[in-house]
Length: 127
Image (tube, rainbow, N blue to C red):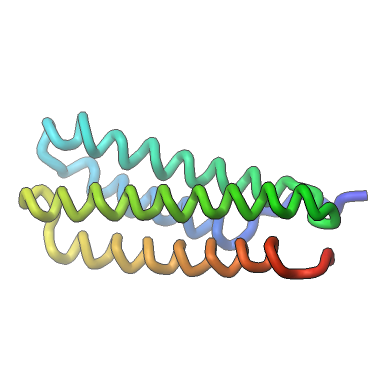
């Protein structure tokens, strides 16, 4: 029997990243906000879906753990897409140095957490 569903820290931290980006998003130039900025929001939302999907699997099943590891790899790819969009925003001066540094640091932490969790799913024994 599965234990009660609980969101991992990675989920909570992704929500915090979304909130931090949302504050920045509101002040981006309109053309950027409605194009690339909206894509950033879609990518963050997809990351939340990856975490929820990975967390939902039966951790005692090898195939399910492999599926979860794939979801976390997909999340890591999406985080790099987000980073690319944020660097683009900085390059065209739509995003300040401070905002880029803050969001980049948060992306780094999310990536580290996703990597550790992916490794756990790929190499650990079932709990």
